[in-house]
Length: 120
Image 1 (cartoon, rainbow, N blue to C red):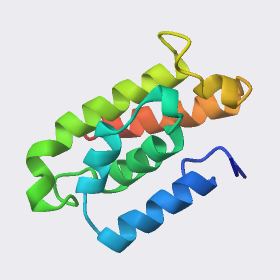
Image 2 (image 1 turned 60 degrees about the vertical axis):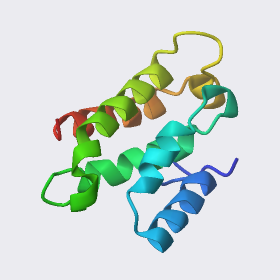
Image 3 (image 1 turned 45 degrees about the horizontal axis):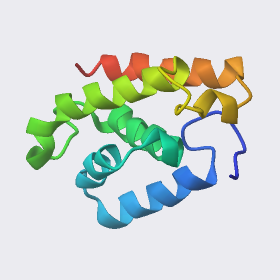
Image 4 (image 1 turned 30 degrees about the vertical axis):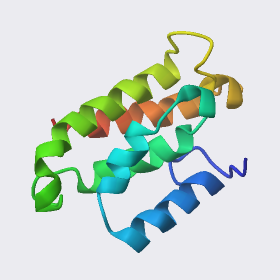
């Protein structure tokens, strides 16, 4: 895993995800990322990247019209995943372990959660 910082976009997996997102320019990638999320696959960085797009474009005024019906449910589900990442319900959630329980990563995820909640 190539990480160079704590932000949602500061790692190789997120960079790859953003590349796919901008190539497709389709919010369905966010939904697919959510549907395919599995803590055992450790695809946390993709969820954080999807969350970043929703932070930036999660307003009904910035979101594509064809995604509006999915917007709030998607935000709620991603918030739930982010919350479990920093407060794991079981041993399958290893996000904090990967980051060596860094307070900085916890703070960054909390910021994402807070920013997403503004769109609800």
